[in-house]
Amino acid sequence: MRRTTVVCVAVVVAVAAVPMPTAAQSEQVTLTVTVANQADERVGGATIRASWDGGNTTETTRSNGQALIDVPRGAEVELDVTSDQYVRNQPYVIESAEGQRVEIGVAQKGSATVTVFDTDGDRLSNAVVRLWQSGTPVVNARTDENGMLETPTVEQGEYRLVVFREGYFRNRTDLQVDGDVSESMQIESGSVSVTFDVTDDRFDSPRPVQDARISIEGITSGLSTLQNGETSTTVPVNDNYDVTVTKENYTEASRTVRVDEQPKTVNFSINRAPELNITPSADRVVTGEPVSVRITNEYGNPISDVSVTLDGNTVGETDGEGRLTFTVEGEGEHTIAASHEGMSTEYTIQGFSGTTATATETSTAAETTEPSNGFGPGFGLPALLAAVLALALIARRRD
Image (cartoon, rainbow, N blue to C red; front, side, top):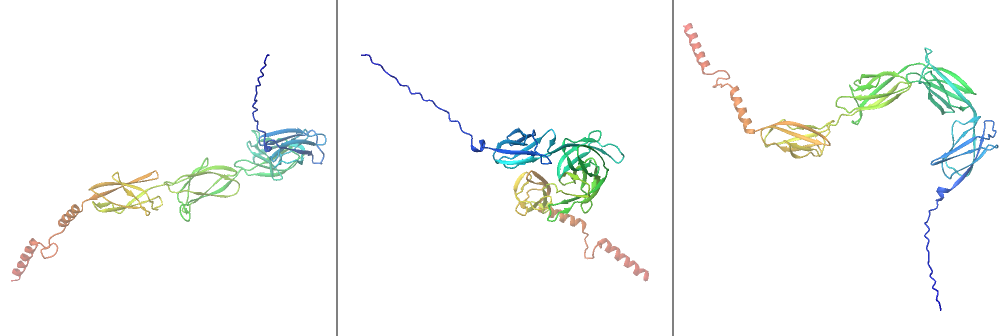
């Protein structure tokens, strides 16, 4: 009999697990967007571009002015609308998208050409032209080399037109844009007073800093503050100025200052440059006797934990009052040095022997004192003899 062997092979197929998108990643909501003009007429054929963080999409309105747009739930979405006849100055913003209906208004297209002149009738290039609609900026640009600016397409309607340039006052007017319109504007040059007030705020009550130098780039570098810490000058209006304040032994301060069309006070604070000071109890020290030093900062305040050396050898650190006491050995000059937070300073004192000093002082006293011999200062033996002879001569003449 013939036997048949059946071999069963088990085949195991491993299927890689593919993570499914999370609900937050995949969940979409549909916006029903309607576009209408100022007459509340639906606008078909308008292009709507929806954009959000990480994506965007574009749809076109149907004849009923509506379009369906899918966006991520909860996303902040900006909707921009363009059309052959209509425009919208600002995008429509949905802060948190849900399934909702949105109506977006548009207006007929218009534009403005603005020409800027000075008071002499010359055209001004690089003048700023701004259009505001209900307090919202729509156009912010500058005139070309011919003093002209043609705005981009904007909604027809009423605007506030503002024109100025660095060194010139603003000129404002209301502008009705009812198509493609033109407007001429004249602006006048001028200056305004600026006062600089410089103080040192390291004191409990900030103190005025006298003789601080004020430098205004492109204007002046020769201003100095008075005793009250102030100084004034005039600068052209509507400009930014780089201002630097300096004074010897003070840190420098600088910043950009905006000057508009009204007098202005600009406050600066500067501080003394970091410094270590050594004040010894005496400049001449008897060897073997203690001497104390006090370490202070640039404001005379004591500094603790300052390392002090004498002739290169560490003698200790200052206490909470900035003081340290040590002895000086050996005659001659000795160098006291202090270092703290990257700063260092030195002071030289003189050491001398106490016995040597006493002998010197005794010798000096002997040289400068005349003997009196009991007759008072200046009456020595020669003087006494001369006096006796003089008395004898007088007595003889009388006889």
